[in-house]
Length: 245
Image 1: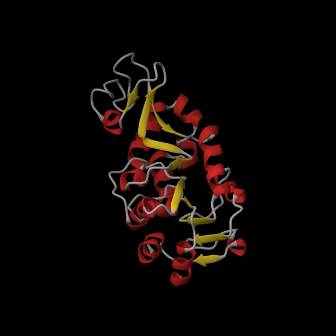
Image 2: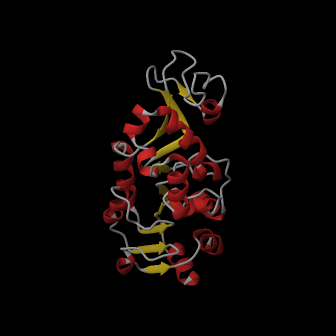
Image 3: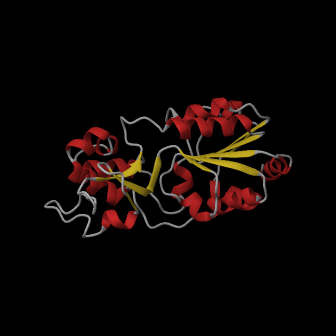
């Protein structure tokens, strides 16, 4: 299977990679939808992750939202073998774009330039009132969280709440990011999908835009699109890509 993937990559001129949580878990970032993630959210916060990171919860209970967000969605992680291999393919001119459902910014940290972040990024934060930008360190700082709850970050300029630039439940995906990702996938001759079960929509629906020759699925478990794929590899995304790139 690895040799077949090497041949597909060698014969491709315009590869797009579409990745999910499985790419980040290999950097030690837990999947909050996993059994452990669900258990921890229910045990400590009494609610599901989907409720905790919804727009309604952010707007009505920001102190609990930020307590959960800072503990479960922001990690000091480093790129793994998958991120590094994809950045290498981009430098070689093979890979034209990365489309990711992850919010950790590890693709850029590894060196990838053309990245469509469907669900935003924890690396960007903006004041809801004046739109002043802040980095991740700021939202953890004592100066930002000096209010009575000690956890909600406020803007140094106007005092507004600083919101992470991530797409919460009940919020729509950025139309420009979504259309850009769809266009990249339509123009690809090979689409490599990795670390995702392809069940979260609308992101998973992007695969339907692919019109190229080879669809490669790399995931530890089966997906609804396995029958449509040229090649299916049920293995670690990092192990596969580091072996073939």
